Length: 144
Length: 144
DNA sequence: ATTATTCCTACTACAATAGTAGCGTATTAT
DNA sequence: ATAATACGCTACTATTGTAGTAGGAATAAT
Image (cartoon, rainbow over all chains, first blue to last red; front, side):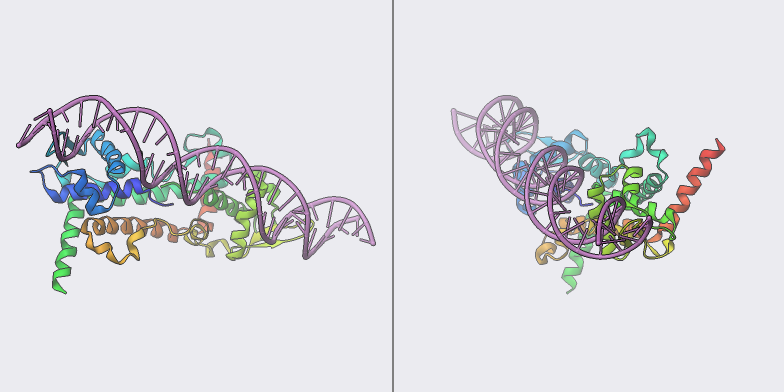
């Protein structure tokens, strides 16, 4: 049960955008440098975020990406779902004869419980929250 | 973020053992039939469960597997960890220069929060709970 | 025009998972 | 004893999904 790099990279990238503010577009080149991600790979991930309506692209020279919504209006569960798909795929959800095996159904109920717990966390966190956390982290660094 | 079949199959198998009680060993052949899993594949998963101390094997004719502990003494997080390994691998936990990238750290805190939520659920559920759920399911079937 | 940037599609390489195969070893029923 | 049953172990293979690469087209600023 690992998180794909797709998701991890994309979340890091969108956090960068949130930190950049909405005035100037931020270029993939910059994000790629800061986060040590291949530009070409990042392009694909940004395409997902753009299609999903989280970010807006500015083409051409001096172009780049900016958030399409306010950071406190973007919940992480929305972002993760776009990249990761369903979180803990339980095959038998749509399989009709699944309930003939009670053990399987007990297992299924467990996975659904897990899935709901994940969902609850991701729903409760917005992009703004993550930006705040990052700032808190910096503040701690200065105190030392 | 999918669960491997290793984990799903093994959980289903150990639920079968819990339902079978501790009197007679249950044979892999039976589990494989009921759960539609290859015997050979199941053997490998049972080896993990046996090494981890969850189940005990009874060799020879009329042999099979039985639980090594009471079902209410087996927490699902223990089982899952043996098969799945760490739940949501966050690479940068041991990477020293991770904190140079604040965005990354904000992301990391999110994944840790998710991981803890998963862990909390799995810790709270025992094998006995799953057996009870399966029985409740059956009871519902009869009511209809 | 030139440069810088996003956009789009296809391709490739690698790793992990899932599953198979075969033989070996232990135990029990008879 | 012997046969049957069932686990034990190791290696192999095939499939799938992920990760990453490549090249070029469209677009905008200068």
